[in-house]
Amino acid sequence: MEIEYSKYDTLLFDLDDTLYPLSSGVASECGQNIKDYMVEKLGIDKSKILELSNSLYKNYGTTMAGLRAIGYNFDYDEYHSYVHGRLPYDNIKPDPILRTLLLSLPLRKIIFTNADKLHAARALERLGLEDCFEGIVCFESLNSTNRDNIHDHNDEIFDIITYLSSDNEHPLCGLPKTPVVCKPSETAIVKAIEIANVDPQRTLFFDDSVRNIQAGKRVGLSTVLVGTSQRVKFADYAVENIHNLKEALPELWESEAKPEKVRYSGKLAVETPVIA
Image (cartoon, rainbow, N blue to C red; front, side, top):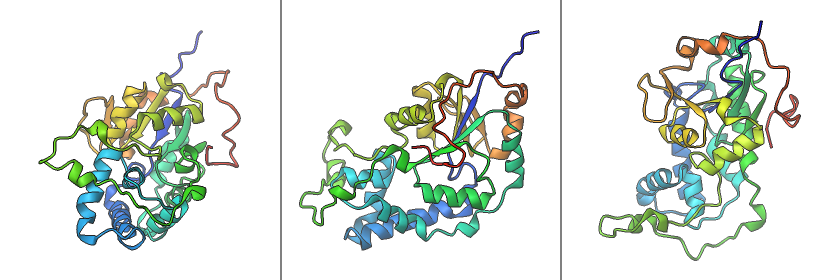
């Protein structure tokens, strides 16, 4: 008798606010650290921080990507150390329920985060999930170091606030491009797919961001919006909590037999959790 395999063979998970809840407070602390970095390290006027950071996040996916786009140069590792190094990781609690769910899934499981590898490792360790994933696609996987291109002074900073003001009707296509590759850029998602060597038609992508889900769908992934039970356009499924995974997608457990031919390369070694 022929075995019917699951529609999916790979699960691609976002990390922050997906594998642990927004209520942890980590995201809000991270946002404050970013604002502090903009003031303390980049010398941006404190009165402009809120509007600027919101505008950059809206138009570039992350504030970091937006800062680089408009002309600020800084070391990526220093930025991540400042922004993530002071996070209250104790707020992330071990999750044995999620651990049991993940280990029971007979599919490849990979993390795909905009964060740096150290933050990803710390968060997964706090959750007790560090051995539940084959690998991690993170900031370093998608971006090369920029240490050799740092300049102490930036003579020209693009004034995005003025450009986007209601008095000036300028097209978004006129915004400067960012050198940072990150979600929700389709380029970032395609690159992550290539790095992890997965078939997008057989991959289920979990994320708490509607924009990321929409971008994932556009490049061919099946999608699960996490954090709400209300489906939106481009989301194939929606789960209020990652713990509801088995109720929402019981088919993931239907066939525990794996195909004989594994389609991925050996680059995702167990001892090297960051996929690069």
